[in-house]
Length: 57
Image (cartoon, rainbow, N blue to C red; front, side, top):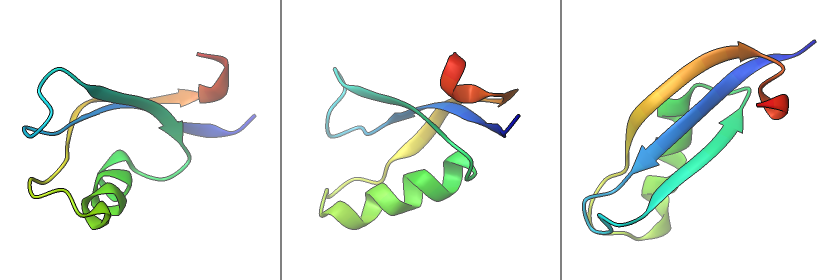
């Protein structure tokens, strides 16, 4: 089975929205990828968990 991360990423410019996702990459890397989308405020990881088979959760 593949190990990966389940994460919640937030941005202060959009306080009512959260991004919930999963990846085999570290959540901090995913937040950095989102920071290149042109939003004036940086994204940050609010929660993460390393799991076996994150797609299942």
